[in-house]
Image 1 (cartoon, rainbow, N blue to C red):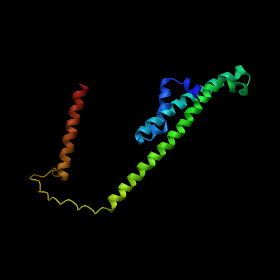
Image 2 (image 1 turned 45 degrees about the horizontal axis):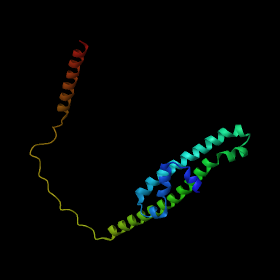
Image 3 (image 1 turned 120 degrees about the vertical axis):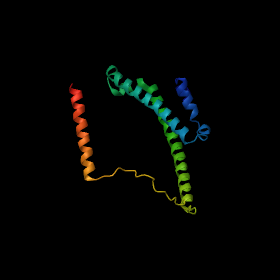
Image 4 (image 1 turned 180 degrees about the vertical axis):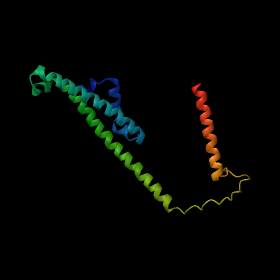
Length: 160
């Protein structure tokens, strides 16, 4: 395990240090989500490297069984981050369940609280002038005629 940790770069070592149980206990749900994303990114990186190198070395080695031993370090790193991801996922599930329980309890408390009285009704005054224009068949016809006249006038200007 120490040999494997010695092959990790500093960002990966920082993630490995951050997932120790004493540090995980102090993280809230949002911080766990961020950590989960970082661990998943590292796990995906090493799984991708392992698969690419394994696929490339099959032809050189003469078979998948012989190529298996050549890619041991990448496989070990992928397994390490897979194990770390599982632990962070468990911790995240616990934190998510705790926050869901707290939200549920809060909603139950709101339901059991006495209802608040509705706000007093405000009487509105009538407007001083009508808000809409009068609408009669004669006025509608006149407006349509004006619109058509203006449209013809604009068309003549546009074509000239």
